[in-house]
Length: 564
Image 1 (cartoon, rainbow, N blue to C red):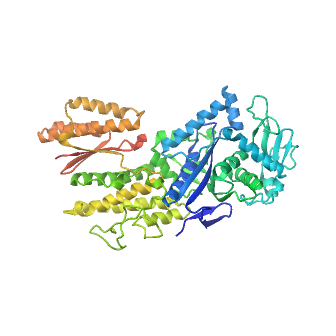
Image 2: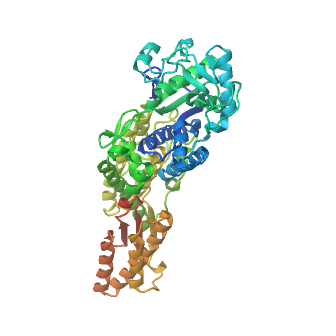
Image 3: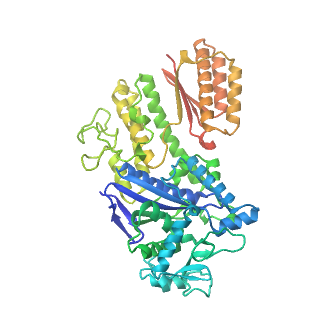
């Protein structure tokens, strides 16, 4: 099935056909930087990052532009309230947004233009509209003449009269029509201003995206995206500006993500349900938050609750536990990890669908999995997709249906857990381990397409004779208590140190067991249990998993000590 997108412009699902074969040019309306971003902004960023990743996974070379509105009435008001410059406010919250996206595990756009860095391009575009009779100047302001653009309203699917009847429009008797909107605003005392043919002033909001999209992507490009609240007036006005100036279609496909409510209500600081990205990540892991945001189609409304995030955290813990058990089985059997399991950027690289095994569908090994199946992505036009991967593609080709696509990942885990049971039977490990490693590799790779890190956390595998046991066990236990008692400032350093401490305690416990000092061994187990660290013993190894990690927004730390 070819990729189909729901196009707001046509109100229909359409086959995706880029303007230039093999290339996708994509513009996403970014944030206005006057405050910390909330969970709705996270959904917007994630939804269109997944679009970008899936297009790259499908073999396209993607250029993503996402802007910053760094000059706006809200920014000017916030600066006045705080006695700061507008530029200081904008710089602070631009940096905060980038930090939040990094914490979510989302990549920056290829180009991230700021409005204030593109004033000349906006002035040139406004001048062009004036010359074409689509804009007019009044007392230093410039307005777009909406009724001079015959197709105004085609994105929101309402006529200018319908829009006028339903709009809240500030009265300005200087405008020829109440629907006309500002392209340029004459400067007011104390406000930032730039020179223009119409006098000192600053651009209106809508013109910035037309100017920046045109500069970086051309007069016509493939995909324009943003929140559904932008359909009117912002995106409607962008079309009028850009197509009025060039006479060419602006964007071919228009994608809009749905709203996020919190506990069934619209976010509001007065209701106490306003959740910033930072607050969400203080309470839950980034992967659990993202999995919830992906649990419905990006166009549908989504309700954010702590209980729903906790449910996703538990589901992710099951995936990570499966991945950990595959790593342990490989360590116990002395099997090297698959190279594919450590791929870090495959989902984000164009042309990542590489040829896989040519085993026929239906060629099954002793573990009931199609041979050759899950190791790599393949071009859809040349070979059938591997097991699991074709279902994933079918879901994503259906207007980026992340709810179905994430369900495919959990189906793989269920099948993988069945294989783990078979692998514990006599001779089962050697027979089933390759399939299990392929499944784990596929989970990592397809998870990357959804911007999910499904690795099992930091898993350390140590041999008993490779662990130093020079410290008294009481000193190691005291360090463990310090580590788990505070929220770490550096999660990576915390995980590394905790894994080393756990390895040391496991080695101390195994040494006590070999000396038949059962009281000392039990004391170590009890000290670990007191910090919600679970121990699992097998004939060849002991495994420790930090079960508190999800509650603290951390991936689990897992340590395996091989007994021989």
